[in-house]
Amino acid sequence: MPKTFMPSCLNISELKKQQLEGLKWTVHHAYSGSEHYRGVMQKVGVKPEDIQSLDDIQKLPFTTVNDLKSGYPFPLLSARMSDVVRVHASSGTTGKRKILAYTQKDIDDWATFFARCYEMAGLSVMDRVQIAVGYGVWTAGVGFQLGCELFGAMAVPLGPGNIDLQCEFLIDLQPTVLCCTASMGLLMAEEIKRRGIRDKIALKKMIFGSERSSEAMRQHICDLIGLEELFDIVGMTELYGPGTGIDCPRHEGIHYWADYYILEVLDPDTLKPVAPGEIGEMVVTTLKKEAVPLIRYRTRDITRLIERPCSCGNIMPMHDRILGRSDDMIIFRAVNIYPGQIDSVLSTIDDIGPEYQIILGHGDDGRDYMTLRVESREGLERINHSEIERKVSTLIKKSLLVSCNVEAASYGSLPRSERKSKRVFDNRMS
Image (cartoon, rainbow, N blue to C red; front, side, top):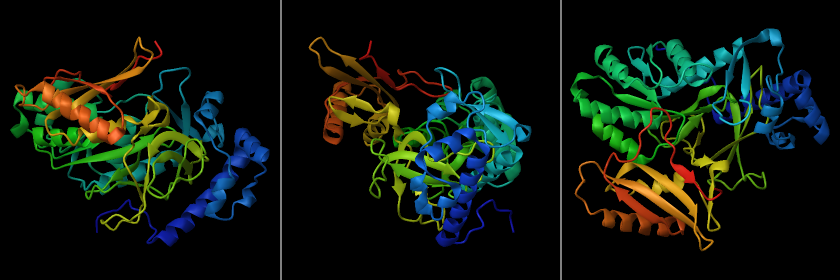
């Protein structure tokens, strides 16, 4: 029987029992090992022995990004420094980066549930995985490679960029899986078509991480190079790194590894649980993390829990794709909009391409204005752009209840990226 990396628990009852044991351990470990955690728990009058049920998580204080930054360079460290074997840093661009420490057990756990991601995506040890995400102090490249090697597939660790080498290895090494951002996936798909090498490669699947991708972009990539499947993988540096969840071949939601962390979805203003199926902010609590455990960490990622079980039969619960971040929310004429909502609207329009830009500005009349730049679909260069503009404007108004100017251009006119594409430009402050 093939080796599996799936959890040992057989049902939800066993999973919740594991979660409670992990929650108790985490609170005790953090309280005894971290001066910060001990201080904030004492401030709200909570002791480790007060955690007797999963509902007791609501007694615990929240942890924020400021707690990580203020504790630089080793924030929230709850293990002995002698047990730290590695550090990783976030990809933030303002102020000091968030540096997270890892014990050997943390590294081993990360590899295990990342290997589970490859298993969930239907890979086998015969697959060859070209890894085109960032290496270095970031968690991306090393995380994808760590899980791949433990799973038993062949890792081809290229990193991002260098399109000539990417294409050369696709032909010469015949990788079957490409791991990259959605933007890099689009760039590679267009390049494969441009070079006429589709019939020379063996690529069957892509695994996207690090940024949201619209349905239109995903379908376009599949059509360009004949992919069988695309998968969304999630994760963040604070929570080990990438690999904390992935969608299965049924693509009904992101299975997240609830035996390694508890996920709450809360209203970002009230910090109370949202109604079932409603969107809110992801708040995570780790259950096994030694060096830097997280207790009710506010990720600022926006999603919703999917209440029903997946038809694949796996008991791991699901959340929806990430709509955006609470700090990326656009407030336009008193309406709250997440970029993912615009993604969803554009994905319903057949005549437009996968890339878009949102430009926000402040007019001389004192009002805010939004311009949405889109591309016509490949092969429709002669289409009436004014008709596309009318269609997009009408659907945005109907779906999001705001008016916007729409500028349509030819396919390929908007910039492509080897990492993440910048799609929101808010010029109102300037």
